[in-house]
Length: 337
Image (cartoon, rainbow, N blue to C red; front, side):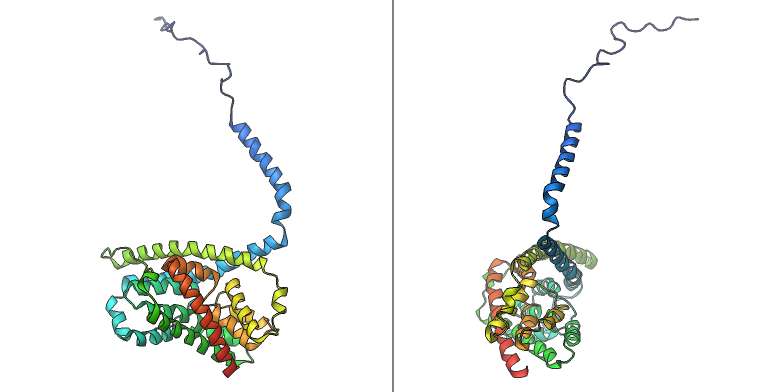
């Protein structure tokens, strides 16, 4: 039998490293132990804070705002992307009057056809502007769509079953504010104040353009929805409820307070009528202000509008809309309510 191969004497068997500890101490066990320690300390220190009623209320309001608004935001993004991809620009020149002052009320009245929330109206209005629609007309549609669409009208009628004039008052006041804001912006607005959103370049495929526009709008608007929801939830916790009861009996002040409350609460327009109906200590005119202002100016909307159209636009558009909303509520409430 041939001899086995003789091992190379240069190769040490067993290797010299066997049975010896590494010069570098292991790190992972220490990291694991530190994580466990932090979890234990965090549980002891943070549990009373995380279970505090104020924080639970904050989390509930924030989640409710985002969950309530997200489906309508997605709907608006889909509609805006469809307008961008499938509707030719020539359609808008035929559908709207050529004269800008006539186009504003027509666009405002078109809001009664589209069932959507205020979060949906922002991407749709930006899509209209990107397709060449007069900004004032697109803004009128932005304000009227979440306030006078069929879903909101039915919800208001259900919330106020014994007050049919509340439905009529909300429709008239909201449409009047939308048209007035459009006309004021047409008369005094400057192009430098409004950033018309750009759209992804046309690729030649309608479905590809639809996908690109949808992704662009959803990522852009979704972030600002979260910012607005965080702000609204914080103010919901900070503002004491007792402050509201003390001003309910003051006519003009109660209207302004409920208008501001609508801005802070940021309730979806399909649900705000039920909240307004629960404010029994306030007058019908004050409740009307809550219903008119909320779908046009609230914290999540301000964040969406500033992010979509620019900060210069928001700091002018928001106060104008709020003041006209309060004024229209007082006038219409005095006449009809």
